[in-house]
Structure formats: structure tokens, C-alpha cells
Amino acid sequence: MPRQSYPPAVWDGTTEVLENVVDVKSRYCRHLDAKDWGRWAALFVPDATMQIGPSSDAIVRGRDAIRDLVAAQLRKATTLHEVRDPELREDGPGHVRIVWRMRDRVESPLYLLEGTGFYEDVYARTPEGWRIASLRLHRSKVSMTPKTLVMKTVLSAHRSGWLRRVSPDADRTLGQALHVGLRPGQRP
Image (cartoon, rainbow, N blue to C red; front, top):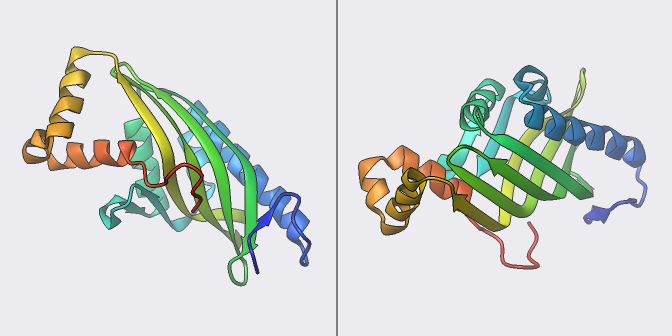
């Protein structure tokens, strides 16, 4: 079935499915910004995957691992996540794929990150309702403004390749956050 834009052409249950997954994604943003990690993690299936950045190293597997990583990364940050314009298509029995236009803002003591792009999610129907089975973030624009000399130094070390030699994990995490994988106007 070709990708649909809201309001979608109707196949059996499409409107109900769309309403339910819009509710899930709305709660995803609300609980993420509120740092309500228990409720946020409950929106994922137990074996969910999350990918931010192009590398297969960027894939996090399992609801608990996803929660632990994101909670640690955003512990001291104030965030704002917004999604809109869901494009829905059936992705097999009990699964739908939705591409969401997204905008986020993450402000920590060290930096301000602002980005735009798309979430590409797959939702699975479970006994508890629709849940996120996989989530992938595609950025078309990202800017990071360092707020401290330390962060300016880290960004410079990342750009020069020095951070990769000193701390490959820190370099990979920063690279994933700054990765822009889509050209203007391109969609996943």
C-alpha cells in the first residue's frame, strides 16, 4: 500500500489505528520531555529497537536499554519534542509504519541542540494496545551551540578526529547526535 498522508485513505481500521498511534506518539513526546521514564518506556515493546545516526552501532536493542541510554543522556537537560504530519502505511499484519516530521530542542548545562527531520517508527499491535517496535531518527538539520569552554573543546576535538582516538564512545555518541542524513526536502 502506498504511503498515506493524514487524513488517510481508509483501509479497514485505518482511522482508528491512526488515532491510537497518534496518541502513543503524543505520550512519547510528553513523557520524554517530563522525564517520566517508566511511562515513556512502557510505550515500547520489550524487544524494541532505536537508531539515531547512520551506523548499525547506533542501534539500541530492548526497551530497558533504550530507556537507560536516553535517561542518562538527558538527565540534566530540558527538552522539547514535537511531531506532526503523520504518514501512515500498513507494514504487515498488526504493524504500521509512520513517518513523522519532527523538531526537537535539547538544552543542557553544556550545550543547546536544535534539530529538525523525521522519525520513522514501526508500531505493533499488542494486547496492551499499539506500541513502538522500532524508532529511527533521521535529521535534515541540526545545530549545536556550546555553552562552555569544555563543550567548545569537545566539539573541536570531534571535528578534528582527536576525540575518536581518546574516547571512541563519546565521539560516536556526539557524532550520532550531530548526524544529518537527509538533504533538504528529502524524506525517509
